[in-house]
Image (cartoon, rainbow, N blue to C red; front, top):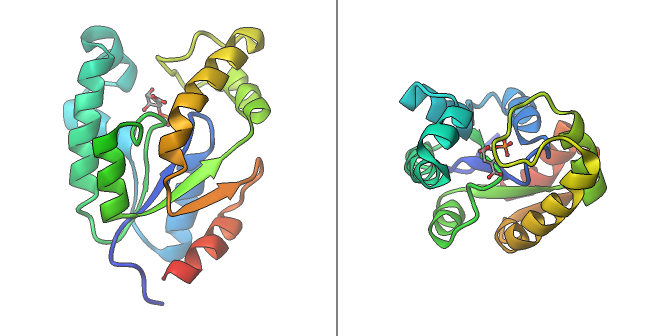
Length: 173
Ligand code: S3P
């Protein structure tokens, strides 16, 4: 099989399953998988939530931009990026230029359900109470949708499988 000579980037809101899907896809294609947040943690030696609490969101976004630029130079691989990573003009431009990008699009109700029970610490979320989460997610999603929707492939499903993701991507190979 011939692969595109650029990485496959999975983007979407927190809780959309990018890392789980990305790992499964990478396994199928025998490609390297990288999670941008884990890469940032390895490079800095700090957990993402500590970067947010000690240095603030602005410092995290700078690190995120630098690490994203490095990973996008990888020729073949699957990269799952944090929900906020594609949400500025510079980052989305880099992603569009250097990768085959996929937006994993999940409904608001499913995002609320998943994030209310997720054990993963997410510094941006206002707790796990569903009534508080819904307006927060709805409003942030609205501002982010214009970036996510610039992906090469948009997959809309609350139960997306690695097989469906593979089928959607194959025509681009
Ligand atoms: C963020 C999403 C997180 C992580 C950070 C900020 C965001 O990644 O990068 O907490 O701004 O949406 P996940 O999308 O993997 O949860």
